[in-house]
Length: 271
Image (cartoon, rainbow, N blue to C red; front, side):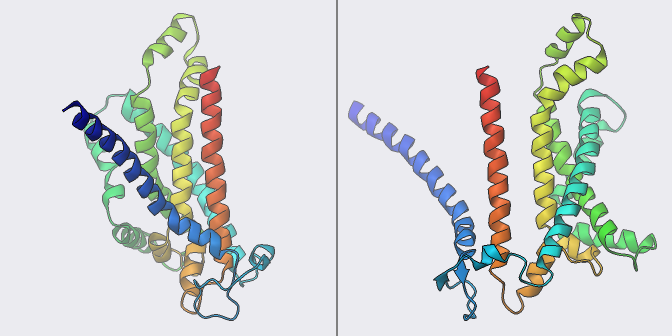
């Protein structure tokens, strides 16, 4: 019986590990394909994802497809601006919802989940109707995309920062005030450093959502072309391999930020 129990425990422990590894492989196989295809020479092939020959030309000439780099820069600009505004407003809203009691607080806590739960086509068409009703129907472009991205990023920021604030030990702030620290000093020396990982995570999530959004952007873009819209447009006649270069660079930057944050967190914990 003991042997069977040990065997069952061994299988249970290793089965969970194996399942986790399979899930990770399943998640990263498409990324590996994108990275591989960034070195693919398909200049004479119509099958864009048939690997023919290894080449560095895609990396040496990332802006070769007309309009691609302009679309990437535009997506980065919108993403950074939307992230900045959404992170600022969302963090303030999260503090209000966690630290203050007011009429309608429970309703607000429920409403913030609606943009996350609603299909993008619903939110995109609603924002388009709002812009048209406000007289911006003929002026759709950079500004309307920016406003739309702030709107759908806000919910993700509020939820992420709220989760960090809810787990924050307020005794640390009270201890600082007992040592005659002012509210301003307590916030910058105690509260903000503890909340910052949640704010940083919310900002990274907002930028990712903004950079790769297509449905909401397409409905409110007018003649403005972002990177996802560029990819959708060129897909009608064949996707250039430089698109995979952009995808690989964005993945490597994200990996660098995540690993860097993890190393810094471990270093602080060790100190």
